[in-house]
Image (cartoon, rainbow, N blue to C red; front, side):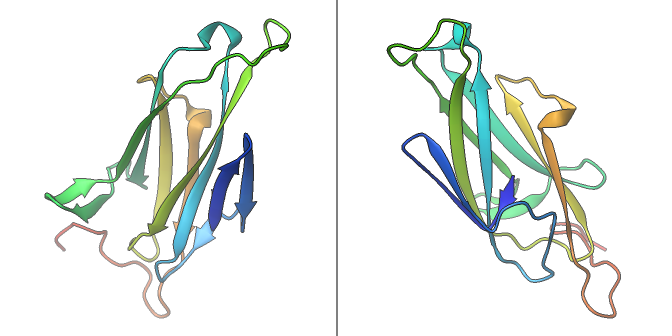
Length: 147
């Protein structure tokens, strides 16, 4: 879920300003709230995740980083254990709250966050949003491109 702010406490997601799909045109803080359901038989096994932001053409969104322009990709790893007393076979929840900050994205553009788990992705693991255009300007040049 796209939201203004998210955090995890006591195994639960706390979301503020959640469920939007249109933002901008000026950069504003944002966050991603995820709940990964881990099958019982994959407990106590590290799960690598990655979130990549792509534009409407499927190209990675480039952002300025310490090494210059770089694709916007967030990576991490989670691992969940089985709590005592849980019925065998019960899936395990892993809530994640990832603060993204205020991204300078092209007004009038459409963007998609793509989730990978252990190098695998599915279409249902994608979340798209649009950035409002500037008044009198249909679309600006994408970040990092030369027009």
